[in-house]
Length: 314
Ligand SMILES: [Zn+2]
Ligand SMILES: [Zn+2]
Image 1: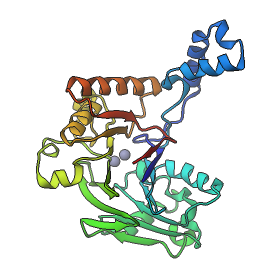
Image 2 (image 1 turned 30 degrees about the horizontal axis):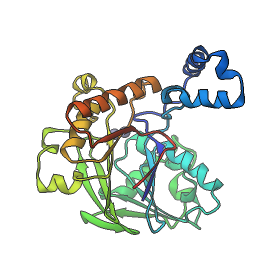
Image 3 (image 1 turned 60 degrees about the vertical axis):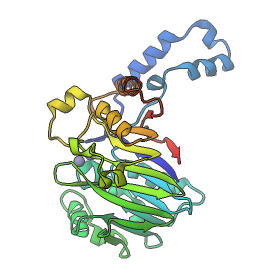
């Protein structure tokens, strides 16, 4: 399976501000020496040496990931503003999928605000199924897209063949993957998903404020969190902020490293980035998270930032 990030920001879309672009350009200019600018090759080499926070960006779109399963099935988790970028990308693909399985963690704005811009939902030639463990999925989705907040409603303009699937079984199948869901700790309820396919495990756990009992070595916890090859985890805050924002429903990156260590995760992706953090700050948090993993003695865990546009192959 291939996981692609279309939006990794938490809470609110966060475009890069002009002053941040200016700061990046200014920092690049300060680093450049005359020899770096002498030829096309030296310029490319100079760009390659720039730190990732300076040259790139984790992006500003809110939660959305695309999973391509081994049999070609396309799964989307969450319809934050990132699903708008995914929708635009589908138009450019030579062989775009025709069937979409869209799973929702929950229905806070940052996880549904892109849905009105998901073009396949309007086109009857596409098959779109929405999933959630909540029984009133159809009502929830339809009631978020109404006048005067949006000019058209789902009933008026979206395809008549949309399917609203309440997931009642703890384990179900999508394409070639075995999928299970679990409840997270988040105001108003949120759900995580675990995908297993060809011996590989992918876990999506956002939004969640990790609690003591998430670390308990119970069979139930192990069946959700255990032995993930890749885990995408809500790690919005630093530990200090997580303490300040107790009960807001998000975790810290350091607790995330503890959690990934407890559950024998191979690759941890820090996700649901705090809107107030710029790229420099996020990459500093990443360095701290990696340092903390080593300090715990966990040399097996790889920690990354979820970055818009990045792909992970499992
Ligand atoms: Zn969120
Ligand atoms: Zn939320």
